[in-house]
Length: 294
Image (tube, rainbow, N blue to C red; front, side, top):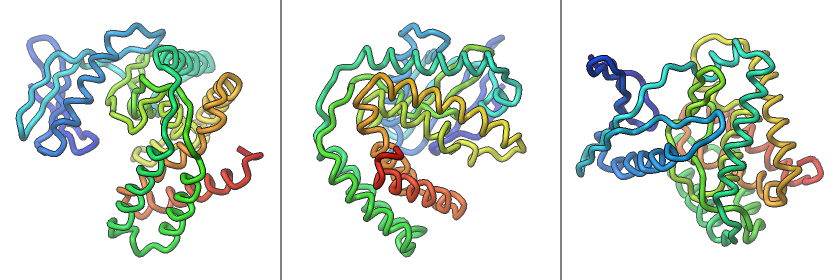
């Protein structure tokens, strides 16, 4: 039995029933995406070999690849998405989630090494974003968007070399890539990052806890007030924890969060999403211009 479901990133996702077991098949027929999907699978396989507290990584059993196609066969997890989980979660469950996130990122930090990331990594990425925005038909005539990109380029030019942990990173640690099963949390859709740093995972989780990004992709009704309260609680705990421990977090979180949303903007085409991104980027630029409020 095969049941197709909607996937992200242009991939096809199917629930496949083999004998008495269920599996997820994630595949692409885009030759340009083949190597990316295979690299995601390799990253997830490596992560599945590590033991985490309350964090699990679904096993990948097979990776099939040709010049034009790729398919990964993955363990099926009975779970809820983040909104379904938060609708029912009590204080203790939220506390468990906060602890699991902190433990996971601390483990990443402990398995990374402090390195100097040259300033050109950030400025080259910013130049690439500016180029893609200028070629996006939904943005290249948007004066506000173009001005935000210009101001962001000036910010990135001023960051300089960054000293931070480099080595281990999920790459897309958002609520939409966490499957919730009681107090166990399964991470999916690992992704290569332009800097393989645990800081990028803090950036991505706070993309949801501070900015509620993944709710834009959710089409069913839900309790927005409850979700906002829970997200703020998680965000405050994460921010206070890493602010108190790491200078590199205090120094580089905000410019990298700005870069994170700019990298989303470069591909945006939906009017609602573009308006949201412009508001967020504008507020981040205001914060960066007044570091005492950061």
